[in-house]
Length: 305
Image (cartoon, rainbow, N blue to C red; front, side, top):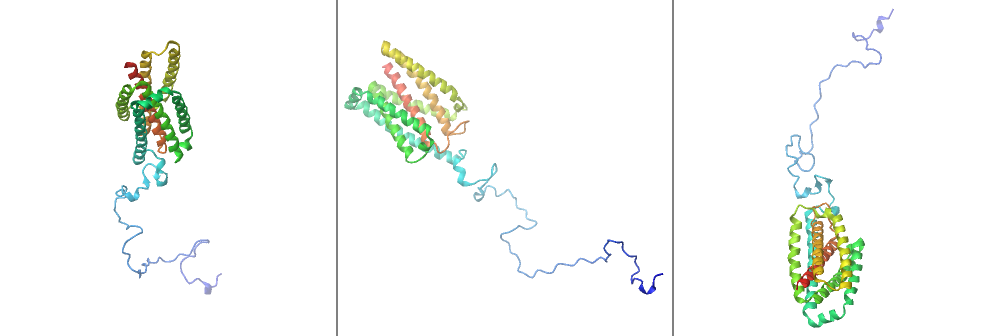
């Protein structure tokens, strides 16, 4: 029997093994008052009842590093994004400024070769310079077209483009000297008008000429084979103005299609487009299209005269 002297001082039954002893509930104690200075606003988190529209500031120029499509945008790499209108416009200005200088120089050479009689006579007496210029044209065209590092690095790209322009200008001037001043000047006017029309059509039409590279290649091969056949006919039977006029029309059509194709690649917004670093290549392609169109039209006007 238990000793009554050792009875517990409380009347509640003992708590079971492993459980915590019950304690009477305590009222919640208030937080001590804040003795620091009052926060007057500024940087940090907003108030709990902050109701500003989180989308109202998305067009702020300070937040332009955030892109809806791609998240954070690093401005160091936007030069490779040709979809940027500012980059595209700068690229187009570079291409057409370079092309304008090339065409003005070529037009001056054609006028000198056609209108200055001593120069015209010298060109006619030395036709082998035309073939030399043709060889230089092919070499520089292949270098600029096939070696990316050459056409993208200054000043090598401008040096090659200058040599290329000199060679093709001599070829165009020689054609004008052989065909005569009247045929050459008419060809210049017709080429200018045709290029303006084709450029406007290529920029406005919904037809994507950049998808027709295979057809253009086949057409080019057919025109080249036809040209070889016509040369054989010339050597065997002599010159034929009808063949010359027909072939000139076919070549004009071919390079008109190339002009539309290259224009759409430069303007962008099509299936295939040039990168913004390819302004030398774009100007070279347009220049070749225009000059060869002039040569073909000069052949037509010479055959018709």
